[in-house]
Length: 301
Image (cartoon, rainbow, N blue to C red; front, side, top):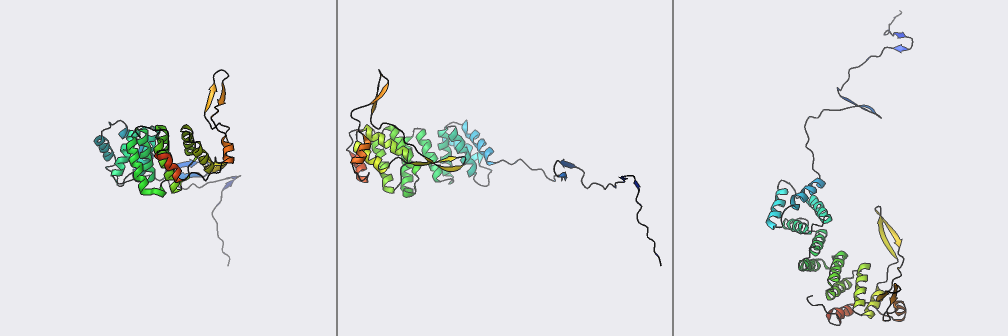
């Protein structure tokens, strides 16, 4: 038996064919340039605009910036700022402290950090250093000294070098050389290596006081570095340091010829370093310098 089956009719007129269109599944379409149409689902709920830590920190700065220096008023504004927070906004507060530090609002930094410490939050080394720096910049030297002694007695060997550097630079500016020698002696005892700025300040103090033998010992124990590390585009790069041709002794300028002349009292330190052999600075040398062997005396320190 033969069975004849008929297929679906195909109508062709030349090269044209009939296109059967299907109903679209989504009503709203967004046409993308690379990947074609992409469906957009309608939102069932409305989402609020989320507030990040940057905007929170800016609002915190605006909240406390125009207030008076009354402690109760500042603390009340800060308490109302974090009243509806489920957790203490530590990151926002740290960013706000950075913004205040850029604007040099030292009193506000002191108030915010003390308020944060009273809440039991953020008691880190970085926060203590920010508070120490703000106290020094605000001229509250006694409170800065109390804070430094408290941190130093707590951490001792774990205390970063930046704390020593900040206190030495403070005493160098105030010309309190006795306290400056004491802090450097603590660094020597704890094995903290000083950087170039500390060596430079101590060398200038030794020159000013006429303690050339201690200056020679200092330069012998801590020679200028041959290499230094710099951060360029986030990468740590080692760069060779070229020595600067500077005179170490006291200098004077001749007004007639406008030339720099060295005084006869200045010593040739390079020849002394080759001739004299010293064992370097130790605790006894610094104690002698700090106790009473200095000819220079500062009243009030």
